[in-house]
Image 1: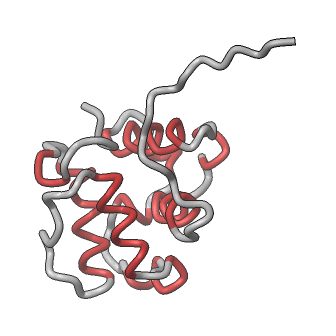
Image 2: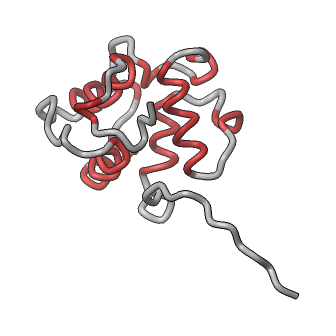
Length: 129
């Protein structure tokens, strides 16, 4: 399943859905609001309303995939989700291996100039000489 393009409410992985629910709780937003958006659009919407600097690991005191380093999540659905995000931003996941999932999301979505665009299939470019 491509989590990046799926609606949040359609995601069957409990671990990936927990990411959105933990972000809701960190900022006291009602859990489930805007779950009809695709995951990409949900993340854009979330980080437009809340600055990444306003959300830290201190706001998430419970055990969460958000506060876990990506390398420790190898083999999980959250790791697959992180790999999709990195692929969409044309970065290797190994560049973010020692970061937490929250740090990765903030790096990719916090600043408008860094925010990921909608996922598009790559097009072939022909260079003429």
